[in-house]
Figure 1 (cartoon, rainbow, N blue to C red):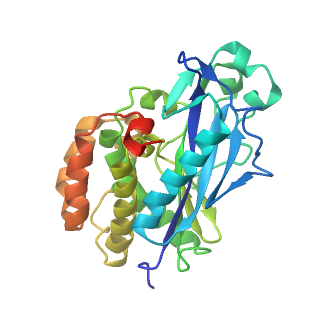
Figure 2: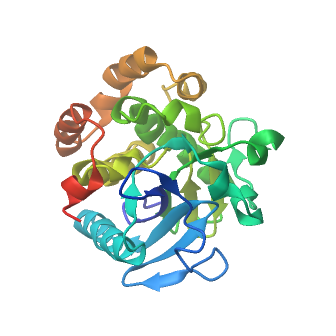
Length: 288
């Protein structure tokens, strides 16, 4: 089994706001849909509920991963005209922006819990409220993982250790805990023919290109830790509880005790840098 040959893609969501900071729905602003996305150079765009969603073509190198996000976000910014992209985990939208069927449509395709081997259920009341949230889904492509159900489940749990738990500390957006009321439980994923779609984390990693870069490094190190047999001593159910409860203290303990020792030197250095970054305006950090 060779997990060193992999690709990463993504389909994160951003909110839209006007020059006064008022939230606006992406419906009617972005023409692409899930069924027929609007094609961009090295990616695509669509509205998803009221959010602006984009995706990048699968990247096979770290630099490709970072550069494609910057390029596609720049193209998305052009599509939305005078509106601005907002990297926010959750927010309450004005009722006037939710007055259509598409704004009340949630998760037509379910995602799954690898711990209980069950479907994640969204509260029935979600469509009636004004709270909307943004995900930062990462698509792992690896020939040896695609179609291997047991390995897919194990890799999702490994991503919880390397991405999900550190995200509690990396994500400085105060609205992130509210996002988890709708989405983002530990292990949330969809199995794919090419690998997995990891859905547990929000869009915080788009707020700075160095955090975007860190996601590549953490994904790489997760694959290597699994391949090298380093995951057997880690209690993944404990990690699950830490993520779902949003326990920053326990996440910090876990990071120091069993995550950081498994990281490559370049990942460890970049993680230290990113942990000190505030939640940033992506126009400033990406130069959009």
